[in-house]
Image 1: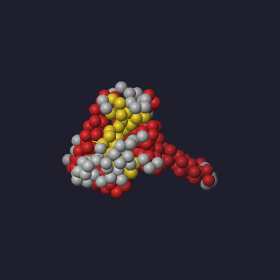
Image 2: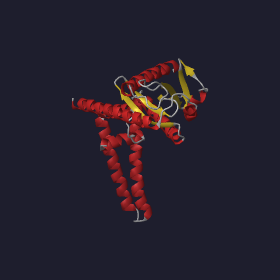
Image 3: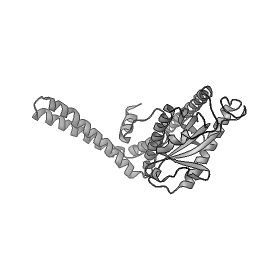
Image 4: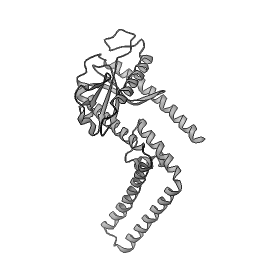
Length: 280
């Protein structure tokens, strides 16, 4: 991670996760563009910040005795000034980019779902999962290998209110089709641990997991165009009720390994495209 990347992560208020979710990558891309477009202004404020810190430190050293309080202030005040400056950059960017907040909310939703999946694994409901699985025509937020429900393709959403259920259902249908196509490729002729005949891929269930205040209005069993909608706080309970295609431990480990390998290939391809773009 470069110093610029670290600064971007701090300005977003959160460090990047290991797997670089699409929502955070897009947020960082937009933030970099905004910083470059306003480079002179940002550089001026940055110089002003360091000058202000130097003045504060000089005043403290000149006016206060060398006590524990002075040394604490020498550390606390510059740190607070840098933190306030980064937050101002963050809010200034959000004020100028109307779509950036959607990517922040998307990252929150994915993070919350990931936390629930950790709970589900501790309860022995799932074997494992892969986050942010990028494909040629889109991505999958989380592809989960359950113990008794085949694969579950999760589309995480953060909403204050629900007014686009049909659109979310269509997106979830696309996610399911992508997951089915992906598993058909590398599970063909290898359906170990399933009740299906050998040669068929594991079944894929698509679900929309809602976070934010909108989740409190989602009833149990809610469906739109055949896609289930689940409140985030009830996602683990929903996983516990799955009773379909069983997957054994060896098959699950193999599936997760192949999914992680596919994600690594996609991440490398994206990084190469991003590098080519910067060169131009």
